[in-house]
Image (cartoon, rainbow, N blue to C red; front, side, top):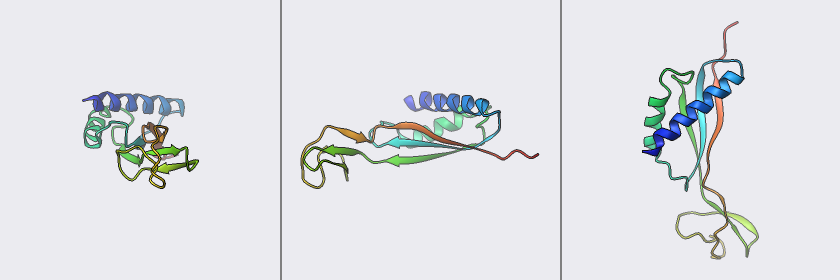
Length: 118
């Protein structure tokens, strides 16, 4: 289950970012995950719950933005979102394309911290 190693790395990144920001408690962690990233969402959520224990993200919610696959069509000269996979072809004109512009991401997009009382 590679989702556990992914979750552990996410928590490490969050802890580093929070430390660099001067500390705090994480309320939400948002990821961007492409359809071709090979990540099973339910497994990642479960792994994140385990990995966050005892960290600044121990109460954080995990928010996931799903990214569709986008290819660049040489014929149309436009990026095109694919309605399904396979095939990797422009949905407008049918031209096959191996130039993937989006869909393989696994990115930490944002971290929300709780406001500290003064």
